[in-house]
Amino acid sequence: MSEKSALISWSDSTKIDGNYLILRAVNSSAYEELTTVPRGRLSYIDNAIEPEATYRYRMTLVDLTGTSSEYSEVATVNKLQNSQMSTFIIPGKKSGDSPFSITAPTTLNPSPITYTSSDVAVATVGGNIITIVGAGTTTITASQTATFDYMSASVTATFTVH
Image 1: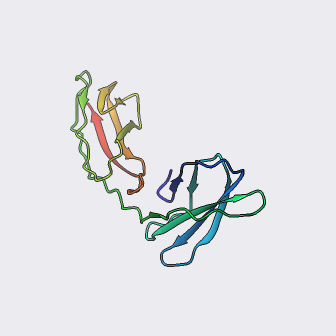
Image 2: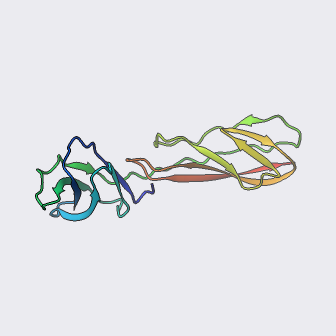
Image 3: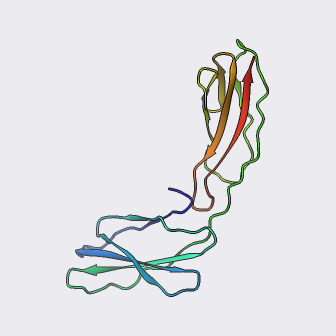
């Protein structure tokens, strides 16, 4: 999921054949038909979310004769918050130094931080541990995926091995 997505999910306790009609209202606008999904499918990803808006969703089951059930309760998705990550610094090391832990950047996003190295001939990253491979410079990227409340984010630090 990206920062422009919302996952809508539900449970299905009916035995009626038909399709779910999902309706969406943006900010204070009226509900409009968003999409139809077959009964048995229990989620939908809305990929047209803008961070500065509030979205409300409701749905109804439309049977094979075209008869609609009552509308579901309303689910609300508020704008995603910017998931700013602080910068982080990785001190220079010497070739042959032992693996060491990265001090994580600070963030409000609760999703795990993952790390990558742009040059695995200089350093590799496993979890939050950097292992030195050889001399050179690499960029270490710290990333977080989007959640229901926060956008995805990433920040980089330059790491030099002498």
